[in-house]
Length: 136
Image (cartoon, rainbow, N blue to C red; front, side, top):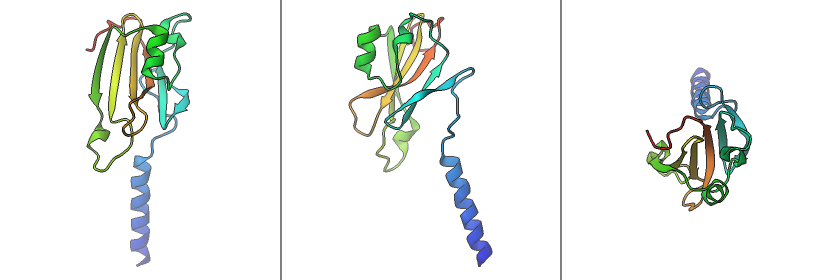
């Protein structure tokens, strides 16, 4: 009977380890997690913005209104649902993401901070000086 309990304990421990995000995960090549966490979202920075560029003014967790007020409207936008949308009885945020593309600057990704939140926070900054400004 003790072996059976040990087996169940190990199996549950393995499953919970798979579901836990790693703290040192980086996004893309040559990127690093940004230091700021906002409302259960870690914002990631991919690349280094040039000093004085539009993206150098941005900080993780900013709202879409703050970003647009600082650097102006994007060249184009795109949106998509995430896999969290399909989790039964999931009432958290990050079920929909909005991508903003800036020609010659890169891409910004915004996500809901919590379930039903009208405000979206900046969660990903991808610096790309060769950005066309349009969704591919």
